[in-house]
Image (tube, rainbow, N blue to C red; front, top):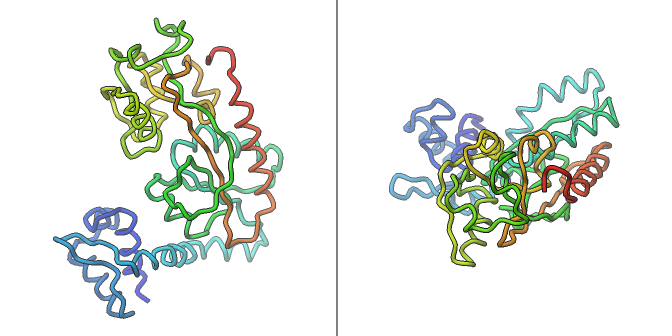
Length: 302
């Protein structure tokens, strides 16, 4: 098996185009295309259709992708595996999530886990939502956390928490005395939005469309942390939820309820292909405790 061909295949699947995969791997497009052709010829399987200079995965390509991810991940992990074998080290608790959950929810839970179990080791992988479903299929993790719906609809998920979207404004803003905010209240304010590929943006836009409303985007961010920092500097408003908004991020903000109501559901899922890590259930319990604590309004954030 040509591992370079395998890496080209995985990168094309993840990046969506041959051009982006080549840029990531520092390869020319003809070289990458040739590697894929060699790989297909070696195993007698067509992995991509060629449509107007685009590569579109065949059914065989889609089915093979999770296996390819597992193969590469296992190979890339070999040095760490041998080190653990030689030193008899316990493997880390492997956690996967998408970016919006990492800073505000997952990292605080990791900190609390280490306080409870100082010897535990952790590995966090943060993947954009469009890639998370594919990573889930690899099974190379212990616990994953995401908002619903998951890109991979076949994944068995377990309820973690539910909350409602709210509006974040800088402290001292003229609107912070309101009990609830509606589209007309923020229509003239700069809107610091998450990009359209994010679940939050999709859900907010969908609920606004139901009441025939629309918010004009001023600034657009791929992740929530810079959006919150712009708001703290007085550059507009953004949407947040109490579950993923950590106390540190909430400092300097006032969070107000939003109408129309926008519900956000959080889930977790565990690998079905790995023996449960000894710290897995403790970590899940910590996540649940944080979600319950943040579901209740606190002084200065309501």
